[in-house]
Image (cartoon, rainbow, N blue to C red):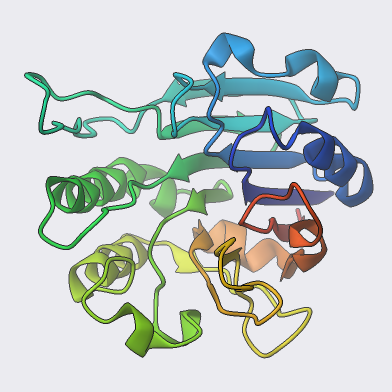
Length: 267
C-alpha cells in the first residue's frame, strides 16, 4: 500500500482555497495536515474539499491559529489539543487561553498529529516561554505512539529551524527566535523520545527550505528557512520512499508563504 502524506501551513484556508484545491488535484495526497487556518471550525470549506474525496477534521477559532487534517483514508480516534498543553497568558488577559494548535487522528494505517507550534515572537517574551512549554507538552504526548509499532508522525509548522543549515544565513537571525539553543533543544528532545526528522530532498538549490517571507523578494532570492517538519517514529521512517518540498506551490500571486512538504510511504 502506498500512502502520500503532506503538511502545509496554508496561511488562511479561505484566502488560499483556490490554491489548495488546485494542489490537492495535482499532488493527490491521501492525508494532508494543514496549519494556520485563520478560520473557525464551522467556517472551514468542508464541501469544497469533500468534492475531491476528502473528509476533514478541523479545529480553529478564526484568528491566526487553527489546524486541520484532510483524509481520503477516513478518521479514527480524533484528538484536539495536545494533552496537558499550556495556555497563553496575554499581557491584557486575566486567564490563559488554550489555542487550537494541534489535532491528531488515525488515517488508515498511519496516525498523525498536525501541529502549529507557537511563534515565540521575541526571546524573553511571554510567548517565547509559552512556545518552549508547548513543545515540552508535545514531547510528553508522543511518547507512547513514538515507541509503538504503528507508523506515527508529527507534521506541521514547528517554527524552529533544526540546524544552522536550515536557514539561508544564520547571522541574520542572531538573537532572534526560531534558531535559539532552547528551541532546538526541544526538537532534540522530540527526537530522543523516538522520532526522527524526515529530511525532504531539494527540488531546486541545495537546501529544502519550506518558508520564505513575502517581503524583500525572499522567495526568488531563496532566502528561506526549513521550519515545516515531519518527525516520524521508526515504523514511519522505515516506510518512507520519498520526501520533497513542493516549491511550485509557493510560486505566483496569492500563495501561502510556506510550501507543502510531501512524504511518500510504502506500507
